[in-house]
Structure formats: C-alpha cells, structure tokens
Amino acid sequence: MKKNICILFLGLIMSCNSNRKLEGTWIGAYSYSENVDSSMSLPLRTLVTFENDKYFAKNFKYDYRSERDYEKGTYKFKWNKIFHNSDNEFAYEVAIINTDSLVLKGNDGSNNAVLKKLNDSLKNQSKNVKLVGKRFLSKSVKNTDLNKVAYDTLSFVNDSILIKKSDKTRNPGTRWERFKQNGFDIIFMEMEIPLIIRNKDKNKIYLTGFHKKRYEIELTELK
Image (cartoon, rainbow, N blue to C red):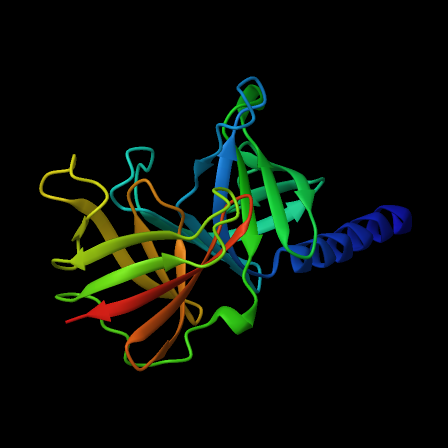
C-alpha cells in the first residue's frame, strides 16, 4: 500500500515538473510532413499559452483547417504527450521540446507542427499601434530565405481585409486578424507566417515572425 502511494505521489510530482516545461506562450512557425519534400513547410497560424496547468489555444479564424478559432481548458504533459481536459484518449505527441522550440507529431508523419516559444522581450512596448485605415511600406530586414530584402505595400482596409500590392489575385483582398494574448500583440494573415508587434517609433512599426528562420519586419506608414 505504501509503495503504491509513493508511486502515485512520484507520478504527481513528475507531472507537475513536466507541465513546467511547457509554461509560456508558443507561436506557430510551420508545419511539415515527413513523406513530402522537406521544402514544403507551410506557415502555421496558431498560438498556445500554457500557464498553471491551463491552456489557451488560438487559430486563425479564417483558416480552412480550423474547426473553431480558439479553445481553452486544463492540460497535463506526461509520457511525452499533452493531454487536454483530463482526456486520456486524445493527446498530442511531443517529438522535441527545448528552451525555444516545440515539435508536435501529426498522424502517420504528416502535419507535424513546429512552434517557437515567445520571449517577454517580444511583448508590445507601445500602447498606440493602429493599423486599420492606414497604408504601410513593408520591409523584411532579415529575409534570409530569399537572401535579399523584400518589400511590399500593405493597405489595412478594415479589421479583416488588407490589400497587398504584390498580390493582385485576391478579391477583395487578403483576410487578416489581430488579437492580444498574454501581453503579446499578434497578427495572422492568409498565406503568411504569424507576426508579433513589438514596438512603434514615430512612423515605423516593428514586428517579428518565425518560420525556419527568424524574420524582422518594419512597417513604415505612408501618407
């Protein structure tokens, strides 16, 4: 009897310690399939916060892969699996977890998800960052995948539609959304990696995004 109690107590301690590995806010970087060309790494528009044995998950509300755009509940991380709401039948299997990366396994090696942990330094330092009704020159200052600086013009028509000068195929435009979670100011938009608004200085807004590389983006307001 004492042995069983000790095992149970040890299991509870290990579960709590395991949960601490996930504590914090993680943002989607990309998804990939092991049986497909590794260059096919699609942007992953999702964000998850783990805190005090509870979680909050947010997906892009216009993403066709999302049954709903957010959920919350309790979780446990044990045996390299994340169990939601005491459901021992359904779990996400963790392939890799370290100080800045979390990799979740998909079924049969497909739809594996890579997330990056957000440092508090990425929390928005400015309280007055307005986008709607404004037009910006977008400059990717560390676009290492293309080995060059990338420019575009973004016009935020309203809180759900923006127009990109580089993309004339979408009518009426590109869908996007902005939300805040745990002090982070996030932008999701179609066909793009998630962006974190970090700060504003005069007419410039500074953002960060993650894919296989880290990207730093500047938005300069155009009059």
